[in-house]
Image (spheres, rainbow, N blue to C red):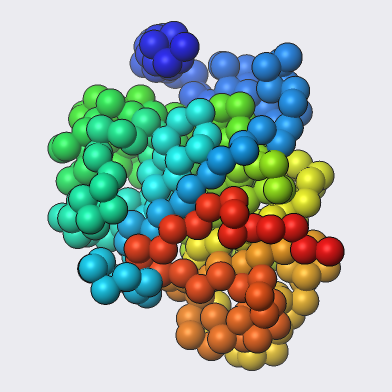
Length: 289
């Protein structure tokens, strides 16, 4: 199945080169979230999910190195995912070694947005392992995409919401000043949403996920972009996520100390403190009545 998957993407890339077709749209083989064949009809599908934070400016393990930026390794879906690549490739690879993650285990790289604290480790990683599907936004600079293709990746440009495999989705590009996509995973306990920085607005991104998938949201984790927000603004975000039925939150990276504290106070036992070295599984996302 994996071989056939890679052949299909190879054919798609050839079509792009020859005919200028935009990769990833439903018309060219991308799967729109409204389309499901018989193998995709049963949702939620993930009975196992593990997220390991590989780079962060917060620390959950003394054995790990910190730096401004974010990267996480996701297993459980049909493809093993590296979500963002942090700011420093050497640090990224060292932390992966500490977490017993081999670069060649990664099958998909998902880049939330183009900022260097989320893409800075990409080249160092590709020098180790480039046999991957790389999902980036269509709005990424042409030079960035040219360099990535130069390493032999299968580059898949994202503009609209789409399904990447049976249990893995993107919100599609959101925002104007800074375009960003979030990763959405279907699990047996609800949706898991991973954000890089939530530049378009955390609430707007979660609202889109809710509208697209119409399922309960078990967890929202990642950068919430509230590091410079005033308490009142943070409170409004907390209240909005509560109205949207978000059960657990795990803010990190650019979320800010004040926001992490307030989320911890308001969500209580449904707040997960995270940083580099943290491991989250579905066992941490018990249903809350």
